[in-house]
Every structure is written in C-alpha cells, then in structure tokens.
Length: 209
Image (cartoon, rainbow, N blue to C red):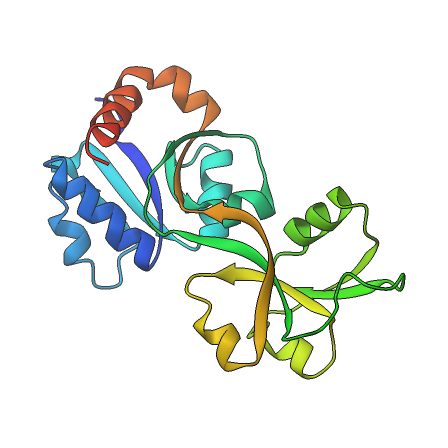
C-alpha cells in the first residue's frame, strides 16, 4: 500500500487557512478539527497526513524528506533557504518585510555603521549588502520594536502587516524589502517519486485560489 502523502503545516493561522483551502477542495479534515494534542493527523480518508509544526521545522521536515509537502511563509523561506521546490504562492498570510526606524530619524545619512535589530538576520544582512551598506545585526527574539526605542539599534527589519504596532511605538516604515505570503514547498525526491499525486493536488489548489 502506498504511504500517505505527508504535508507539514505551519501551526496557527497558516494551518487554519490551509485547512480551509483543503476543505474547499473536498478533502475531509475532520481529524485536524478534533486534533486535541495530536501532531500527526490523517486527512482525505487516510490518503494524506497532516503534520503540525513550527515554521522553521516545516522547512526542515520537507528538506529532509520526512514530509513530502509543506506550507510555510515566504519570510521563513527567505531566512532559512534550503533545498526544495517552491511551487505555489497560496495568496494568504499576506504581509511584507520592511525596514523601520524611529519617526523622523535620518537612517541613510552619514557614514557610520548602522545597527539593525531583527528576528531575521539573514534577510536583513542580504538586503543591506545588496544596497552596499555595512551594518551590524543584533538578533532579537521578542518585540523588535523595542530596540530603536531603547537605542539598541538604528533600525529594525521585521514583518509588517498593518503597521499599527509600529505607529503606536513611534516608528515608521522607510523601505519595503519583499512581499510575503504562504507558499507550498515540495521535497525534491518526493516530486519524482510521487509526481502524479503531488501534481494532481497542486492543480486542484491552483484552480481554487
């Protein structure tokens, strides 16, 4: 018997949006709604399995082939990179990577090395390198908005949805780095071994987004 097609989903909002999409395709996702504390759940009458994981782990599981497919934000893909196929922009989970500073600060003036606080050091480094700027990066785990307020950094690189949190903390966006949304990624070997199943699912998804 064929092993079920295993799909890693990013827990939280992307999980809910993906399950809503699957149900639109007629895939029975009852087990996900009744999951309790379970992390591996049969869907589509056992033809598929959903694995619930943190965003970074979705990439790891797909890259290593323990999951065939993953749904993860473009932000995580840009930060982690990795060997897999990025095949579909699912169009939900939309936001953007942006550079923000304290309102009215002249970030691009002067020649001193600027300090950037972020949860995404690779994205920040790549962006400023592309602009030919030498920056010092400080990795922050919690509320990045605090860093410029405490004068730890000259700017932040963060995900911005509405910009309300920034405004409320006296910060403003000065540059957009890239748009972000949920993406469907596929393991390179799975794409060969389970090509028909994966292509059929992708076609269904593309016809419904």
